[in-house]
Image 1: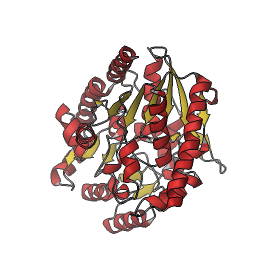
Image 2: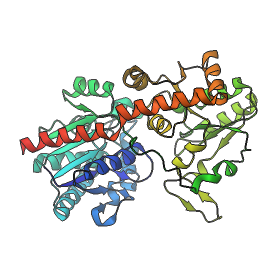
Image 3: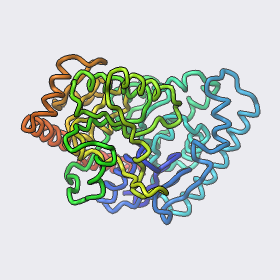
Length: 419
């Protein structure tokens, strides 16, 4: 069985799905005494087991130059082609150096062969695999054909080659059934479905007091109801539905708090949400400037919290997303035993809903049934407790670490047979 495993991606830092899930994979692999190493353009991992290559980051100036001339254009100039290849060659050389430095025996590629945020990195990995025949697992979180921004481009040849590649030594993993079917249809590639997971065998630590004052820092009164939406402020997260629910609850105790900022997707949608909340008489609060990747105190002496500091204080979680690759916030709400309102996004409908979780669900709009159910969850402690305990136990069964451990053991055993 491989003993020195390397995770490869453009970034391992923060609270994005790739960074979070890769950490869980490494934790589960360590149960079998398998050591993990890290390669990426931005890293918050231990430097003694990592190689940080700035050019591998999707936000590096050279990659941004390429991306600006590739996506949304149908013609590619010779200079663009040359610079793509030049960056590919450089990154491939760093992969060789990384594997040699840490004597790596297996690669786990995290989304770098699925979504072309960094075209040259995907090509470099593909060429490296072809040249070395090194066993590898590609963990695909979302594919380029699922995102509208990648539909118009001048690099169909590179996309066909590397996103993902057809390599006989490469095992593929997806996080939902639809992705599994689309990968087989579009590429003729079989894959294993491994859902996102959470460590449900170890409940949250109730002795941690760091986040004890978070409600006060939000400006909430003791009897206020915290309606938490743990998402960025972008259109596909459906914040307007959360505003609609709080408006229809007609309860002045209810305060809607959004945990993250808009990021790099502009300010139009946040402004629209502020205006909508004002017109509906909803108390909307953005808390993104106080939530970070790790705990610390900023230059103004303000505590910066992590997302997991907020969940224990929530009375209700809103998850009205239009699209999610899986839905980490869903598992987090189950883990912290908070009731959650879910929009029936495709992965929920196909993969999660049939497992009989008990949550108020909406079909792209807030109806009276969702309002009544939400009101009961806010006011009926016994009903709320029964629901969250049911969901915790069900999530432990289907989305706990033992599931991931079994799947990884299966993958590694198959790789060992072929080595």
